[in-house]
Length: 300
Image 1 (tube, rainbow, N blue to C red):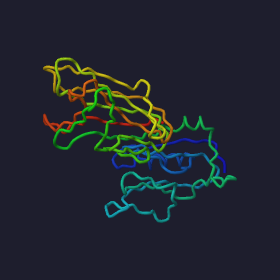
Image 2 (tube, helix red, strand yellow; image 1 turned 60 degrees about the vertical axis):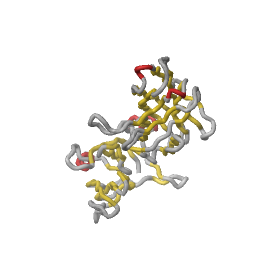
Image 3 (cartoon, rainbow, N blue to C red; image 1 turned 90 degrees about the vertical axis):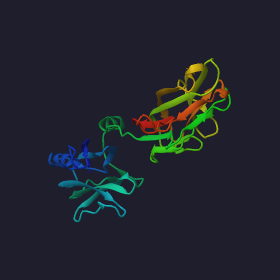
Image 4 (spheres, helix red, strand yellow; image 1 turned 120 degrees about the vertical axis):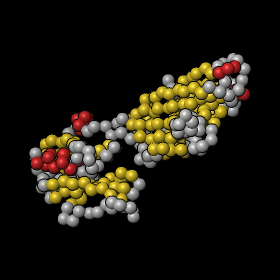
């Protein structure tokens, strides 16, 4: 088997959105292309499907099916008389997508090492053909009803920000230990860490209090290094401005090897002023307001 060209096509697997992945892939099949390998989830109901021009394979039609593997409906069911294409893709807890084809898909060539090999363009050219596959993770220090705080307890002594909620957990990207505030990626991270802070000074005189935040990384969870350029500081005035909440948000580009741990620290120069992160209860007709949001997303 050999291939002369490679491309990736995409579409929606969710009903009512266009283009539909089945129609896009079948149009490519009609033009002489053959689907190869597993669909790649892009999010928001969109999947990509690799395609090759190959001298083997006899696929005449392509279809993806979705459904639950538990007692919920719709159930995911096999297509009788069709052949599986690639691996099953997990869309959510117990909810899956599987591609099928009529005919024989392209069979990879065997290598001396027992793996399989598809003859494709060289790596840089292939990377340019495949759109970035983004992954996201989000955790926060928030509340459900009453106000919650993380005040700096010792002046000029940074303390790690901790969490009590994970709105977008993503074990394929990494895990967050809420109690220690340490995020451990399971794969290399090329992307951005976005931080959103809601800060308040509660007590103190008229002199301003300086509060700051920074990102740190560690290869082992023991030795920590501050990320250059990640520190941000604000001044919180006293007197009549006590109890005024301030907002601070920023993003930092990251390029981290797999397993490199991440954490965020806050500090202030007067711990007696009760200065730090505040998660506020719902008000103004709005829902609760997180004191801190940690959002990590990859671009490669």
